Image (cartoon, rainbow, N blue to C red; front, side, top):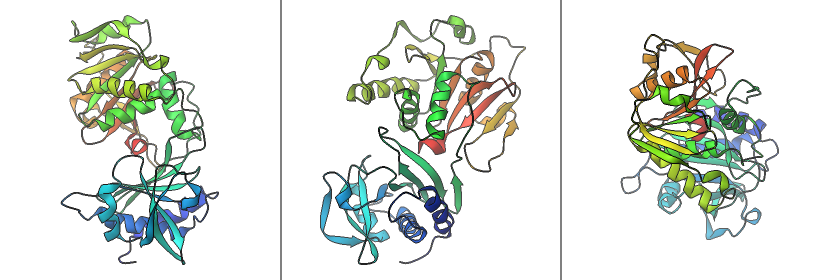
Length: 355
């Protein structure tokens, strides 16, 4: 097999227990797949780092598989050479035991429920996922490996009764089995914001409540009148809905914040946030990450990073029925919401869920 990868062994047993219903999913198999993918991630093909998705599934369990005439060995060199052909989203290299060895049998665009999937995101950065139950088309993240570091996504049983509904839908999506996606436009907006890589801020306010305007500089650079609304009228998971979500997320790349209602109406873009009361500046923030064993940290606003994060936190501090989503160019993603129980702005670090 080649060099070992100790973190793969640390993950394998946990994943085997988590996906107990998945076929052929035992710890040695998981370890071998992760190890090969990790060493492949550190190599280059024509100067580019590979991005690959591996699915542990036989060809007879997927629709319309592309099969190789001869199975290929699960080896880093082979993965790197194949990477340019399968780097587009939604294409998986199929892996399955053959003659008592794991091999690559071809590619597939579909995988069955509970299928083990491993994605190579960047050099040394891997994400272990599984295919959710129908009718969901999303994958749930189990663990993120970055070099020697391993983070397991926490299995949350929290009740989000105190949070705004739009925030609750996103958190519930990741803490449940993910059976319903119809109310998770926000999940897809967050992913699209992160993917455009410009960084950006999205403020979500209550529909027909103009109070938010007291916390922004006026006149607003790009105000929309009447509010532009199309997302909730489009068929679930249609091409039109995907295009509308990407178009809305695109506005967050404009300098300044974008404001939408909790019904996904576009209200304004290029918004500059300002405290509505200079005597009430935010002085502390609760920061959490949905990772097993992660601490709840209370920090000063200056620890958040750039002005975009500080402004979003201040907005939520002033507008406590709103939430703010902030995507950084470096891939970080933070959601800010007011926590009545802790009497503080709560910064949810969510980038590990969106990989």
